[in-house]
Image (tube, rainbow, N blue to C red; front, side, top):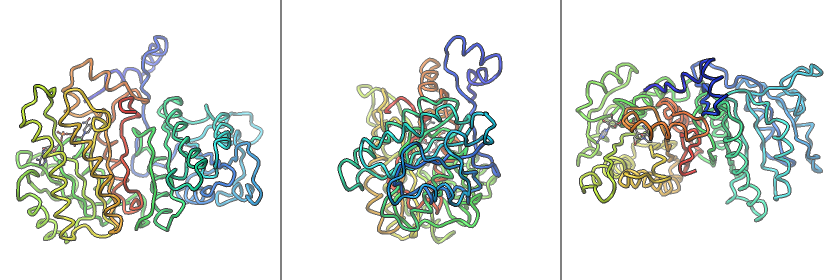
Length: 483
Ligand code: NAD
């Protein structure tokens, strides 16, 4: 479905009119294409005094081909912390905040593809001033569709209460920047465990590559936690799913078809599943991406065993399961018959549980395997006329909360994405006025595309992301609903 208003605004004449009338101004978002550089400009990397991640991040960004400039804000270095080491670190440059993207003495304001700030050194609320000192001079320096990323320590893993308080405060900054900077700039907070292993470093690299790139075009205002796990560095970051067997349910159309395409592009062998009635469309998707098609109604009593048999016979395993299939049967609660309730809960939640149980019991998901489920912002915010749907989608979040710690010992990660307004057949059916409101009520003033959800699922499916678990990542352009 096309967003005619956005197309109009993005034309020269439209932009001028919209500015004059103060109407929503949806920017053209930077989306990923194979071979794209990670960013349209250099990264300005700053660190609070005593931060533990700055050098590591400089090294991994440089390895990703990013031009890294370092700046320390205005805070003086603490005893024993050598800022000059960070400045001279792997990036090998010493550009101070404020002159990063421009030649020294040129007088041209610096422009950055991203601002990345290591806030792990902030141990009490007075230290939060360092955020202001770093970001205030850079508020206009980020290029369109640029990125702001703050790195912190999960509050629950901080020792002193004051440190936990300060680290929790970071969320207010990133969420506000996401609403403030405009022009397609997104802002995220990444909490990195202080008790990391090799997997933590790999998953931090994967997470930064996702968040900085055009793959995360419609993700903003999110908090991502990187923990520990058997994350594996890919041989080629442009094919991060090479050799992986991935099941995608509901793959005949919409978001599921986009997921199948993106995961195949990233190197996966895709098993695309949908109901027999969607067999032709499913076959077309599977053929297009060189995958295989499985026609199966997930709610059938024997569906889990038939699916497990198929995966065992054909592939001997399944590395990633993407639970995408979903339905809506909307009615306000008083008018909803029991069949509508049952159908939605069964497809969207119970069938996922039954399939997970059988695949796990039969050991078909190996160590390092990943489960990715599709929730919805309706599961976070609730929605009039969708008690059944919102219940099922909140249940998906509950499933992530419960299964992620339960499967950590087996090295299996469990995450969900929660799409907001995505331009699909589902949202095309919404009455015009409500549809326009849904589209614009987010920081990016537009709906997302199926590919935006697919790219986010793709990142969570990478073997390199195995230390990212227990997250629900909204793909909603920082929707005001449930914010
Ligand atoms: P869609 O209706 O276009 O596609 C869903 C697919 O799931 C269809 O191909 C359908 O045949 C399949 N499916 C349904 N029941 C099935 C069953 N019993 N067994 C096997 N396959 C079955 O929907 P979409 O918009 O692409 O949504 C995909 C997912 O994203 C759903 O879980 C949906 O709830 C979620 N979501 C969508 C949006 C949005 O804006 N479109 C927003 C939030 C969440």
